[in-house]
Image: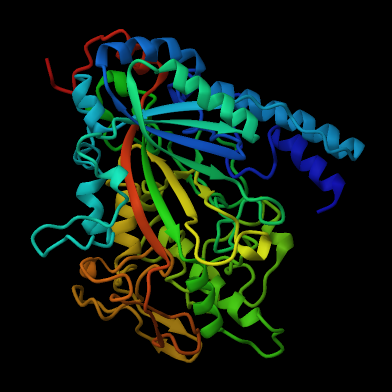
Length: 533
């Protein structure tokens, strides 16, 4: 992309043009919520290079309310984040014009969220989400999280780190600190410590860091992350082809919130955060791709392995979608935000371009004979994940096995329509999408059976995050998954994946309150659930 084109895009977008979520300035006044009342990572998401997640237990509820009130001015709102993005963009425009590399001075950004255990402790009513109320631990089995050694057929305990399971120190909440450099992060962490010194115990901290160039924005398997984000009507200026939804799909109480009529009034402007600590087996993933290359005539060494990875993700490592460039990577498409989401699989309904099990296609089927756009829009989520752990050896990291992966974060107004649904009903479901014949280049081949319940047929699992939830009690290398349809010339050819490349180490659901709700908590105002007196 030329400097002139970059400048034009930057001027048109008013905020960094390579973002998936570009705020609409000004927002539609009919959206129904003030941007000073929404936390900034929910919308439009924090610009960040470093992030610390402080998982805490409230030790003194009264003292916590007081500390929360004093901390509230430090919480970053949507309006604050938009101002930060505009400052970044002003510096970027000057850099492009003058061919300089100055950095914008970005302040620390803070968000806070609470688990159901905290709502119970603080006498806060039901926010209207059963999955949130029961907690992620209750969903771990259905999500396919591997069982610990102590589990039995009647007593399932996920193979999570102990900090997530400690009954003596229940996780009441998380304070996220997003920064641009390590020194700023340390200052932000010091502010959190001093602000809540008399009221919380930080059980553990998980630190994330955006990878350095040339892998900036990529997760540790090497693929560009966060390319596809929903454009919320009235709040986001959509790129070409960007999936759209009503703002209530993400933010409580707004149009599109499926529980809008049942939300208590104080829930307006909030959201639900699904947090997952996901360890990645990078060596295992790379070895599989190398052992199962999808080669084409004229390939250079390594291209077959890269193509196998692309088929499993649905995008090339650059972020270029297979639907637009099925044979080879195209970085010019990947780098253009007006192209890298401008597809809908309609040209590849016969699977000659993107397999139906490709990760991004499983997570968002886009145009499909089985999933109407209006249905898909209700299942969209905002993701703000960040890698954790040391860099891979190829880019200067230490050799040997390492604890590295992704701190997965998603925002949605309801879990049963958002993260939980996507993981259990789409990623883990071998028969999704259901009951249609797919026309391959060699004729009509039925890939997906009409009857349901047979876990050995169908297109298979999401090869990246899909889990064989029927075998959670098996050992890590004792359960298998399959995918079918990656070879357009033989749609029923099945590939067996004999290991999990992603291991859930823990997680929880958190309510992200509006700023008005934070004030109510701090001042101990009544916050009954809907229908409560």
